Length: 423
Image (cartoon, rainbow, N blue to C red; front, top):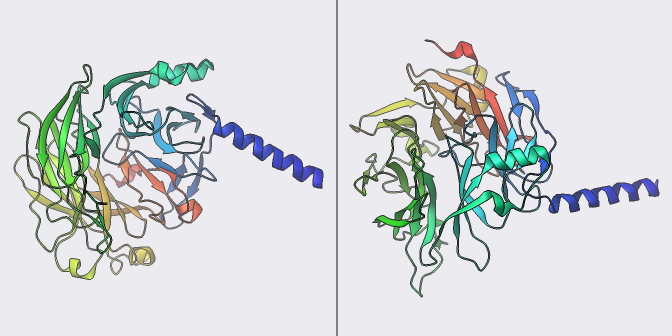
């Protein structure tokens, strides 16, 4: 018995050591399985389920699938350091895509096998990297990997005087990157977290652009608040959306940037009684966002997933979480929901999707406002579900703490029942 235990411990030790040595192109076995949602009865496909590490997706304002729709991208420390991985949606096989220290701000190309990201190596200037993911996948398949730098091109070296703050977005033409920044801080600058309010203090922010081919960095504009959630329109070139980041309720959350004229304006003029958050492009002319109602005072005015027209400013309320009194079959889970928290839109303009404070995910029919509960119990910890539509608008991708009772995230996808469409 003691011998068996020693062998088991040695095996675990060797496996752990191998994982720590894993490099770009490393292939890991499938973790894919399915379960039926206990409330809706719909099948949920689990794509990743690490027993030790969270697998978090790229943020919901950015592409999640590769250009050919074969792989879903996610971040994990499962091989010893924080890297980007692809999981094959059909086979479940997992491939490590990046290597190196301090990688982040991932942007997948929608047109070809390229990935743009920023690397911050210790004691080195930050660099913007272009990675040829098609070559990584091809060499990984052949088992003939080269050093990771062989797959990379340095687009630009980032100046030490400008701090990135708010993320990075790739223009739909894929010739320019837009980067949120914070101005250089004076010597007497203090931590931006106000301990009494637990909110981020205002700082001077801004947008800089980077030419993908030449690496030229240009000033676009500055703003008098902390920059956050920079995203480029997936539909119209030279248009971006960003936010005033506070870590809580901003006085004016959403802003639209015209990169042709280097100007910006408020996207939706919010009222004092509104808590606006988590904006995302839905189509060429609309941005969806949430007006929260998780606190009692916020429930006295309209709330839910909203749509704002980028061209004329028209606003629509698309829907709020199901009323438990009117939907008794879902009463137990919906009483804890209280409000949608994050949202997204299908590119065909048919659906909106939202997660709520109880970790449920629902679809809203944009045409008639009908709401369908899709999947439940996803914990919203250690992070939120952040729902996102597949490129064919037939599936919803989420990250979930359900399997580990909120200890770790797993990547999951849920098919949208075809009969829910009412064309």
